[in-house]
Amino acid sequence: MSMLTGGTLLVSALLGAAPAQSADLPAQSADVPAEFGADWHDPITAAPPVTRPENTTSCQVTVAEAQFKDFTAYQGTYAPPGDCGKSWSKVVLRLDGKVKGRQYDRLGYLHIGGVEVFRTSTPQPSPDGIEWSVEKDVTRYSDTLRRAQPVEMLIGNVVDDTYTGILDVKVTLTFYAGGPDAKTAKDTPDRVLTLQDGNTLTTPRNSERVIAEVYATGSGGGCEEYWYLTVPEAAPYSCKADDGPYREVRIEVDGQLAGIAAPFPTVWTGGWSNPFLWYVVPGPRAFDIQPIRYDLTPFAGLLNDGRPHRIEVSVVGVPEGQVGWSTPVNVLVWQDEKSEHVTGALTKVQAGDLANSSTYTPGTEHRLDTEGSHRLAVAGYVDTSHGRVTTTVRRSIANTSAHTWSDGENPDALDATWVDGETVTVDGRGPARTTRTQRSYTMDGKTTLGAGDRLRTVLTLGDRATVTETYGGRRVAWSRLDDTYTGDATYTAFVPRDQRHAVGTTSERYRLYGSGGCYDRSLVTVQGVLTEDSRGC
Image 1 (cartoon, one colour):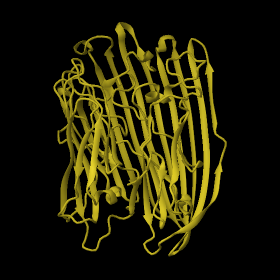
Image 2 (cartoon, rainbow, N blue to C red):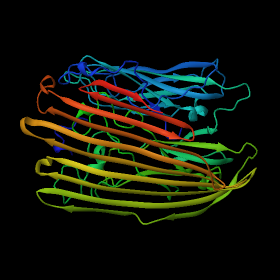
Image 3 (cartoon, rainbow, N blue to C red):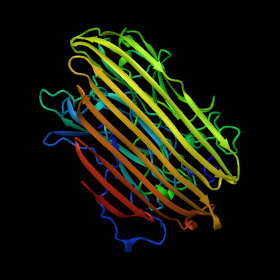
Image 4 (cartoon, rainbow, N blue to C red):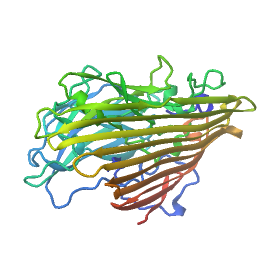
């Protein structure tokens, strides 16, 4: 299934989670072995750690502690901390994991009170064992965390005579108290809701801002795990989709299109036929599946009637009847404290025509060129205790890709770009405030099976975003993110693990700068040894 016929495939608004950073110092070049051995550096990323408040009380609660050997979910109970109040300046989730032996990459989730607070995947272990940690700012789920809640966590796993790695994980929450009169951290929603009966939502009648977040992942095996490589039926390739690789995650309210988005092309730690690319430095977001956010505030006037409304998420481009996408939904709500009922109306829904074309060109080198795009504009108002507020959301997404392969899918290459631009304007009670977010994701790679069954993968991934906020036409805040991963790894395929003679170099540079400051970190690994860890700014 894609990439060499699948036989060798192994399975701040910009900042959310990051593996906790290793204290190990980078090795000197003399310490680099000639090839991968039985152990390597623990997983690490260049992303910044979650910042913590200073000079405040903190409390820690263990949410889950389990060993995952199969598909049995951990069930437990969460209780809020007793010594940090119920108004927190920040709440930080931390997962600590360890595994040894042999195992595929696995996907996992954590639900507290039915709310999906964390979605992740796992690294692949060395025979001697690895440890890794992930941190995430979960302050926005404070409404859920103020009450005792049931907990469910699952990292589905298979352990047998071949795949021996048992996933041993512990998840904690650390709460940082606010002042005696402090409200929970700025911009934290008043309510966190989940869909009832699978697709219905009833909001408080005084809701004045509504955001849906969707943890969309194409995963679970099958071709939708590698949706960006699928081809129409006419093309001779192992992963098929009637309309090619264009995917669009959309959300509807009562059957009315309310939001569109380009999915992030996550590469898991067995991706592109070559686990040696990911043993130390994972691809962007692999351990932190960030949700797609949709501003549904234009629909608040409709949602506030006290009745349940149908919320549906779908993925455009998935072949009919084919599974592989998971799209759990949380809904974040801000309420008007001085109103019992906020009225309003949806005033505009204007969707452009969906453009999606894939052109297959046969030859010694097969080629599929894909272009897709879509636009949507929605607007609505709410009459609040502080006046009428109008919200206008405009979103434009596009995807271009060139997929080339030869007979036997060797070599197999992809050069693709996804663009997702969103503008949200809030007008009322003073000058208009506009937030413009421009996201772009890139993937440029090639896998080749050469002489002696030496399989080589060369790959570059990019995760970029620019955010600009204006107030009355004047810029008041901005940020720019550039997270770039590069890798080049080779090993002997179709032989036991100890005969692969693998070599590989990987690197990541994570840069985030803007009105809030600057962060710049670079990592380089060779044969699993961390050879460079440098910081700029």
